[in-house]
Amino acid sequence: MGGLDETFAEAMVVVMSLMSAIIIIINAGCIYIIQWSSVLRQKTASIFVYSILTLHLLQGCFVIPFYAAKKSKIDSIESKKFICDGFRFSYMITFYGACINVLLIGGDRLLAIRLMTSYKLVVTRRRAIIATISLWTYVLVLCLIPFVPPESEKFCRYNQQDEWTTFMLFFNTLLPYIFVIVSYMYITVKLDEIQQKTQAYNPVDGDNKPVKKRSRAISTFNLFVINKHKDKESEAERERTKNIRKVTKLTFMIILTYGLTWAPSIFYYILLKVAPSIFTEEYNTSPAESYVTFFIKFITFFDAIFTPIIYCYFHNDFRREFDKFWRKVLKKQDVAEIKDENSSHRPRSCTSW
Picture 1 (cartoon, one colour):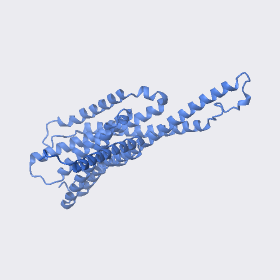
Picture 2 (tube, helix red, strand yellow):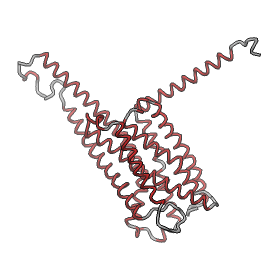
Picture 3 (cartoon, one colour):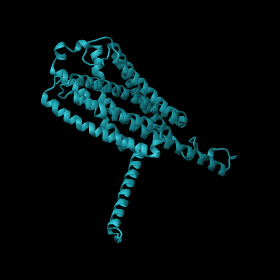
Picture 4 (cartoon, helix red, strand yellow):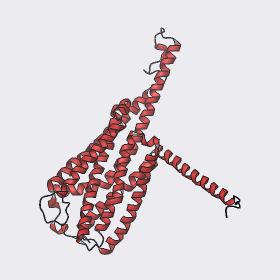
């Protein structure tokens, strides 16, 4: 049982099975709504959300079931090997895929605050798709490498070499993690600066100078037109900043959820590589080690539940489109019930027999 108490392991298998079903339903539902809605489907940011929801769907379909099977009683050696390889590969690709997706979301928000008005011209839907596919391909290729290790007599065919693990943990986990933290610190500062500038703007005159001190050569009508134009620019700037702040808050919550659920696993495995002497031989062979590794993996699965819930609840466009979808479903049900009711009251003809 991998060091876990048998009764505890059986209970956790049931819990993970239920968790897997919940994750599949929630993430598949979110993906379906995005695909159904022309409004959400055309948004560039939806590509990154679609990517991370797909990753969570993979967790629900493969990672958790493999992990539950790994903790179950299975007698067949070949089945055990298949489950071991399946879990390790699916866990690695979703683990590093989550890191890359967080990097994509953080980079997107950084570009949004840096480019502002030209963001939509630079970050196009096509470029977002190319970036997402490229990074997924990069992760897939790297995660296939442990399938071709040097000759060994280890039980699993999927074996991560020390060099591979070190490279992946530092360059594909820790560095993206640091980049995202620094990016959001910068984004917070920039948003505060923009808000202060917007609040300091006087709608009567863009330069905060009294109108009466201006040159008399400017007519009252021209002054009115100039101020009206500046008012519109200021209003557009405020609206743009408001939208960026809302989206940034949403993505920050998604990334924070990732950080809280994946951080124990990230730092635990980094410690294992950087300072293995911290963990004694007695600890490595004890039941405590089995419980620690189980729980840090188990905690990561909650990211696949919380992320879609956060997105569904805090994304105004998603809520609006979901309400539209639900009303359409209810309308179809009402029409179907009316048709059934009409057909049940329809008089039968003599030929209907």
